[in-house]
Amino acid sequence: MSSALVLLPDFALILLGFGLRRVMHLGDHFWSGLEKLVYFVLFPALLFYAIARTRIDFAAAAPFVLSGVAAMGGGMLLGLLARPLFGPRPMVFASQFQCAYRFNSYIGLAVAAKLHGEAGIAAMGILIGAMVPIANLASVWMLARHGQLGVMREIARNPLILGTLAGLLFNLSGAALPEVAGQFLARLSEASIALGLLAVGAALKLRGESGNHLPSAFLLGVKLLAVPAIAWGAARTLGLKGVYFDVVVMFGALPTASSAYILAMRMGGDGAGVAWLISATTLGAMLTMPIWLVALGAA
Image: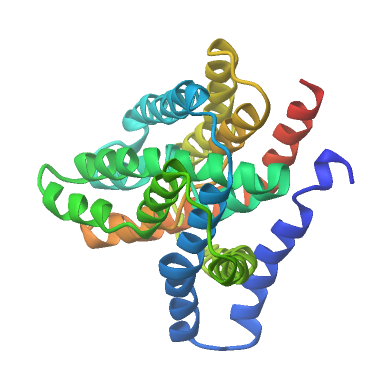
């Protein structure tokens, strides 16, 4: 299978989730429950299982994480340039600003697994654990001067971070997973990616953007084109190769996470505009991520 087609099954699952929600009429409670199952149980199990079993090159992890920070920081700085495009709508800007740098962990783990198996999942898990606190703090800071304690509690209880930290601690201990525990976690891991991608598709919203499209188009370009390019440049500069290089570039190429919508709604922001941007980056990533994969194959 060529590089451009590697992600086709994953994107097909996203589109299937979009269609199932609208055709089968299972109700919002079903999809909400599915997303909670994936977020609180299946993906933490996947992260723990992959990280606990993978030999991690901690010497290379520091420049790897630094490359991720550079990519996210670049997205933030470029996102700030969009402020004049929003005119007298500061809260709309603060809401959509998140879409320049936040990332979809579900798609990231699926892509990492496709590229490098458990080693890719472990690498992406390290990035998720490091980048989620930065993304949340930056988003809350932009949306309001208060609310920091709330977001710190969310970070401390984030199941993806907890799964990553638990896996790292187990890895460092040198212990081996009991066979029964390994089989149990393997079954949960097998279910996680397919259900997670279905949940991503079910959450797509194609309405909500109106009026001036220039700010949204600018943020869309930053997330899908500029951020992965920055990740590529930083990784090259810091000498990354192999799994870490591929994963950090694809991390940069990820679409925006649905958590941006949740935060905007909780803090009285522009939920509709953020929902549209999340969907636009997800659909746009179906075109741009295969291109970045081809570029990785040619590098």
